[in-house]
Image (tube, rainbow, N blue to C red):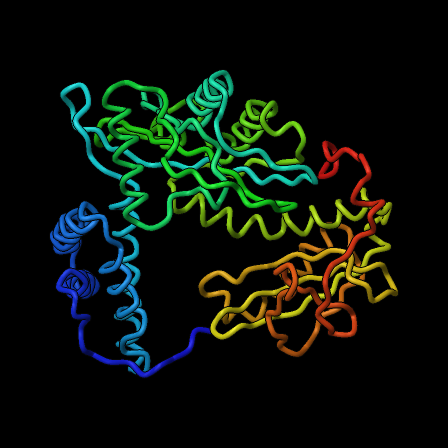
Length: 410
């Protein structure tokens, strides 16, 4: 849980941070839509100025202050604090992932988008440069099933792993600006960012196709925003069609993986949704991995769920064992995101995901365990049925088997 350290009403020393705090509180106190628009315009201008300077520090300072201030206040004070924090957070995201740009002598609304994929493989999950024909296929399917008619689209010519996504608000702002320039020039693709790091290897992980879309101000960006269409266009139908068609478009790049498409959309909301969905996907991948590697069917597996803590950092760790045994064969992590730190239903959600993956024997460890790592190789340790944190170990024969994962999740 986040520690409730001593709070103060003193504003941060940074004038940029202090200015953001004052604007956020003014917006939270607003009593009308017209006043909202005034403060929102002021906030947008101030955030643009700060982001152009390339530093996230004043933004983080303002968010931290608004989160921590007035923690001990009355309910209405806390509600105001939450409103100010949420108002600032929403405006920061909007400033980073959207802009207005002149295209063809008309102002266009531009939005940075992410098209997530969840994949698992015992081999390396692909990341990096997307072939030209694959990029074109993705563009075709997005235009056909997700975007409104006439919307301009450009895609970054790389498949991002989470470790390769832009870090920090200023970096996301720069990517939006770069993609906007591509839209203005009519380019269908954007070169990958500089200083491209290697993707870290995981059994299951997410990947992202990133791009930007633009439409004249006031016009729809997404197909389901189309008013008066006959028959009515449903968002759910658009998303399901994209998942089917987009999956085919990525088949040559993810040929050694089992994978699922996630709903595309605005950069921040799509990446957040994927952070949530990848957790249950990883559990399903773990169960399939053990089934394939050890010929251990889900009913013969046992999952052990424990909450682990290291200072303010908390997560759930799930150890997978053979039913009736204590050796940990594999492990998965269920990160706690934001308000989930105080959610008593989180273990039930983990259990539901495990049961959907086919496991019926599930043990919950009642005590809070330390978030320990192997002192030799640095990997996380996972709980066994006796509440011990152990190194996950699979036999060499299983590691070297040649089983295919293509149909493992189906």
